[in-house]
Length: 435
Image (cartoon, rainbow, N blue to C red; front, side):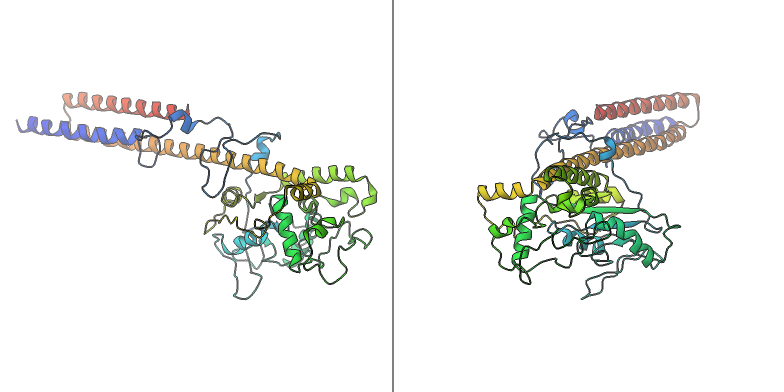
């Protein structure tokens, strides 16, 4: 009699446990598979895994279109950027700092805002930080704020690729023949009109960058190849019209020039080929070098720049990047005629930025979708693991509650059958998510 009473008590308790466990299978606490709000999108809309370039999670600080206009043919290899950066080994991250692209801010992030086993040592009042590898007196970062302008002020791609390996091997006392090092180049780009206006305002305040080397094929340009735009010490107070009227102004198409291999066009010798041919070669070279870089970011998309850097290198920043749109360039009011003139002077940069922006946004979308797939796989594996544990637990629970008799074995079989039904329901839910 007492045994029958115990069974009657046990059955509702087991039923409650069944409901709780079944709910955990279908709607685990850390999943997003169950929605009860009426304003949410359907499962297909929310979890569509097709590679349509639609932003499912636009960031509040960045105004984005709902779809990316597809103009260029990028392969999956172009989109899937992942670097196995060995900070303990010999790998070096090289930051190509283009003027007025937000490079100073990004450079500070590199030395002060990355979670590292051995953080960079930045002393108050000093411009440079010591960024050593864990347990080694060797630098893993080549940048303005770590190694200084070791290859010249704002060295470009042509200068860095020929200079950095020599400088870093010399600093770390490594033989060039024996040292097989990976140099991962990174940079930042900016909307050409905004960058151009920002450079004009900077030059207007007295900046010159006249100590830049502009080395190419082992020599700097001659005075005839690169004549100065001003006669005095600097160009302080220069009007925008005069700034635009100097034909040798390096602000024109600066981003293409600094990313291209200048040796392909005879460096700064403008007579080696026609202007049109020179432009085509420079633009193609800049696109290829940018596409093959380990990483690049866009000033207009700070949060996405942070996300892609973290996904590419497997490193994490301590603080989130901030989007600042109230820049000096933004405060400059220009007419449409002046804007067209600036766009014409920077026609190569305009085309490069269009290319870079689409590739950047496609890489972001690709990584978001890949991350969602990884998270769904992780949740599925966790549910399967919990299911195995619950099977074992409930089987033991039925055995203890039934006292080991024949009837109890039948109840245990029924419990396992119910579990299989729950597993089927869970599997169906995961299929719906995947559809």
